[in-house]
Every structure is written in structure tokens, then in C-alpha cells.
Image 1 (cartoon, one colour):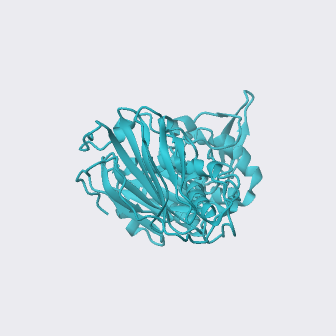
Image 2 (cartoon, rainbow, N blue to C red):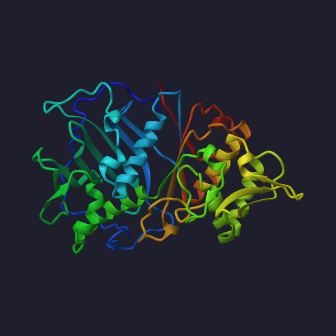
Image 3 (cartoon, helix red, strand yellow):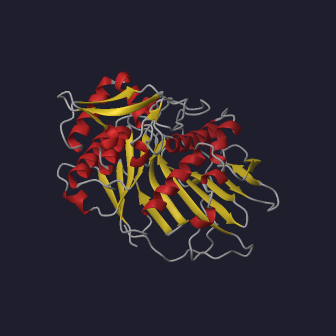
Length: 414
């Protein structure tokens, strides 16, 4: 897939969509607020199936399909990292984060060739489609980066019908005018803050007492459940080499506290730990009989490899590639309860899908390690609980990897 480079006109304007029809579908999804009908099934967990970058950094009018395992491939500067950054931004907004926290340098997200509009505003547009029991639901968000950071347009659609749309009325006020279409009922209008995702506020603003309202909530909650269970895995081998302080046992994004997490996971799930040991045995040099954590007198804990002959190797002595391999393997074999994520608490974990974002999926890995890690990601993806979106500089090795199926490669041009 090649990203076009022609600049769009009106980077802040959302495209027009059809008006809502009088009768909404009756499908529902259980989620935050408890307004779902029959609820989620194991075969239809909400998940993001497509990423839309209408105008974001180096991307223009781009749409990327996302499978159980998706790899963005291309040379440096082609937009692999920015695509993952947009996905993570949507996830954080879906979790209720404030716009300024998600985009501390929003001006850098504006495409270079997008000039200011008549009001001297510049911004960007991102969005996604979430599949699930409510059918495909699309979210589009227009963000003004200059002169003031704010959300100036948001639209939630289902089946091509508008369910929620927002727009500012007074540039001097930090609010947007939100319109909720719960057909066949009258349109609901209300002011909402312009620094938060309106879709994330719907479960708190819509009662869900009628069929139309339940349809709107089902679509919004499906989108939120799909977005919230996202873990951006950014292993920092330099930080992983030193003992970690005892803590909650939830893995941080830089994986610096991997030893503390091993202390927890080794005792909580013997089956998953055995799978991790098997993965480490395949990807690290020398024999590996076990992987465990050892408490130290100063209140920290370090990770060790048991070589099986009485020799124990400090995990910090491994190479950068080996440490990254161990960290990503651990993430793929765990879940939201072990990772520093904020999933939808009202939906059982077994009915949610965790999406792992890995920028530099193949960074520092030798040919054997990257194929083994890809096989692990594909295997977990087939089970339906884990999805993986990564970035690689060259995907030619993916097509040559024997026995790896279910991987979507998105080729980007510089």
C-alpha cells in the first residue's frame, strides 16, 4: 500500500456523510455504562480493523487495514512511527485523556503542505474503524493544532449513518456543540469540552432508556472497548539491565521493570510462564531451563536465566536484541492485567482484545529471532485475544518466513 503525498484541502474539515435513518439496527454491545444488550461474544470481540489518517504528519488521505498482525514496512521517514503514534493517540483519547497530554507537540503532527484556513487555523485529522457486534463503527476526529489546541470536529458513524457529530460555535469558548442522533427520537444537543473525545463522554451523557439511545451507546462503547486495550511496547534494553524496584508487577512501556513482572507472572500462571521460557529458549543463545526473578537485599529484584547446570545468568548480561526479544515475547504472552493499560473494566477480560504496538519490531534482532517473534505474534493473533501492530524497516523476510500466516504487511513509500 502506497501513501499518497498530495495535500488535502481543508485539513480541519470532516467529510460530509448521509443523515441518519429513522430506524437503527438492534445490535448491541455490553460495555462501560452497562447499556449493552446480548453482550460480546468470543468470536466478535471489538477491535480496530482500519486506521484512517486523512491528514497526519506525512500521511494524506491514507487508510490502513489492520489484521491480527500488521506490519508497517518501509525506509526511514516513510511514516511507520507516525502511523503507530496516531493509533496510540486515538487509544489514549478513547481512555479519556486530555488532548494536550496526548499531543504535547501537536504542530509536529500537521502535514507540512497543509496551510492555514481562512481563520488561520492549522491542524490534522485522524480516525479509525472498530468492528464488533454492533457492526463496523467509524470515528473521525479533526484536531486544531494552531493557534490553540482543541478538537474542532468529531463524527461517529455506523452503517454510514451519523450518530454523533461535534463542531465549535464560539472560538473564544473551550467547548464544542455536540449533536447526538438517536433516531427516531428527537436530536439531542449539548455543549462538551473541546479537549476530550466526545465519544468517550457519551456513556456518561446518554441515559440508554430507548432503542435509539442504546444503539448510539452500543456504537460508542464498541469503539471505546476496541481502543482502550492498547499497550505501546517500547523496550529500553539499557534500563532493563539494572535491578527493578518491587512494585505492582504491571509492565511499564519501556519494560524497565521486567524483573518485577517476572516475579509475579512466574507464580500466577505456570502455563504462560512455560510458554515464555520456551520462547526465550528459542530466541536467546545458550541453553535456558527457566527464567525467574530474585529479590535483592536492597528491596529490588533482578531477572535470571537458569542454564540448567547450576549456572545462572543475569538477564542484564544479554545483548540488546535478546533483551528486546524477551520483552516483546513477555508482552505477547500476557494480558491487560499484567501490562500498564487501562482496559474497559466493565467488560470481562476474556471478551476484550489487547492490541500491542511495537515500533521497531525487528530492531536489533537476528533473522532467527525476528521470525520466531513473528510466529509467536501470529499464533497469539489466531487465538483472538492479542493483536499486534508493528513497524519494520524491511518486510522481505516476512514473505520468506515459512509457516507464518495471518500477517498483513503495509508497504509505505518514503
